[in-house]
Image 1 (tube, rainbow, N blue to C red):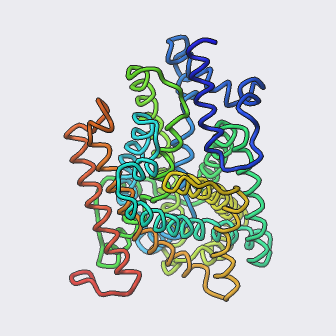
Image 2: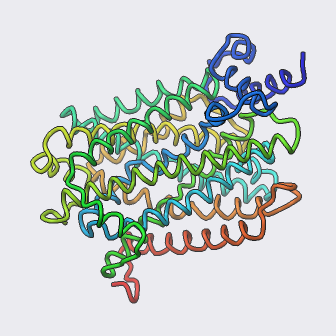
Amino acid sequence: MSESLAKSKFARSKLAGSNPGNDAPTTEAIADGGSLTARTIAATNDVLAGRRGGVRAMLAFSGPAVIASIAYMDPGNYATNIQAGAKYGYDLLWVVVVANLIAMLFQALSAKLGIATGKNLAEMCREQFPRPVVWAMWVVSEVAAMATDLAEFLGGAIGLSLLFHLPLLAGMVVTGIVTYGILMFQGFGFRPIELIIGSMVALIGLCYVVEMFVAPVDWLSAAVHTVVPQIADGEALLLAVGIIGATVMPHAVYLHSGLTQARTPVRNDGERRQVLRFSNREVIVALTFAGLVNMAMVMMASSAFHAGHSDVAEIETAYHTLTPLLGAGAAGVFLLSLIVSGVSSSTVGTMAGQMIMQGFVEFKIPIWVRRLVTMVPAFVVVGLGANATHALVISQVVLSMALPLPVISLLIFTRRTDIMGQFANSRLTHWAAVVGTTVVLMLNVFLILQILGVPIPGLI
């Protein structure tokens, strides 16, 4: 057996070992059955050996950042972007751009940690921090994973409920079944799940391309406000804080390092550097796409609601208002994108929860148990008659409280040469990450105070 084939088998073995399902095919079945994952690994080996280049080379390495990018197009973003566009028109488009640049930095660092060390962020925390700290981080991260899934799961269920006139509980059941079905494809390796999530990301983008043709967008004004900062009043500033402060998702930071840690077998630092270059390019492309989708959400809300319906702030209200303004087709496309966003982001959130548990405490549970546990909070919220949108808001508070743990840990690990070797952050990258971390964490404090109704001097 050649060394490259042995490396490939080893990588696939690691992949199969981290698979949360109990019924995954054996490593040999993946390797010998001509699966998508086996062909992808063979393609990446060809690229590293110089036998493949161009767009085909880029596609062979694409997948991890695409999966992570869905966290930036989840139902929580829908609510925030709709409110921003309806209330302030195009004024806050520049905030979406800034938030996206910060997200690119953290996702690139997370991917680099996995590539350089072969370990994900949760595993690195387990190795480097005292045991009590590790257990505390795991508990907080699990709560954050449930809060993430609450928002995403409810978003998909709301979309199904509105589009097909189902009771919300029925929409939740359908969402749970669909996400579980998608998660089962993990048993066939990493490539099928990458392609499924990638297709969903593309569908969300296509929905907003359609919306841009239907909605009467003022393209000149949108272009100006994309690059010219403007804050109209204290409420606009608080909304800008919410957009940036809730952009970087804890589960996406954890997950990206896990998606890259064993995806491509490498033999030396030269090959590792090649993989890192491809990873950085993919992060830029995938997060740029996510940023454009978020900007399209703001522009659609601005063009449809700003002139006469500036009080629109909830997904349900947006749908019912869109129908008479832009027609049933535009409203239906909006709901389709929301459903796809909810299903895909809930799937990714469940994947992140599995990785967090395995990384911190080396414990694995069947994927159906994970899916069931993360669904329970949503069913409790709806069963108690609580307002679904208010539940989404509360989930953002939980995420904001959990965010410092992965972000600060990532900053610590990626600057250490004893962990990263020659891939440790440069001085420029380190200080950019410090500034980004400081900005995000400060804004998350403001966001928590805002949601909890605590007056902020100078803003209210």
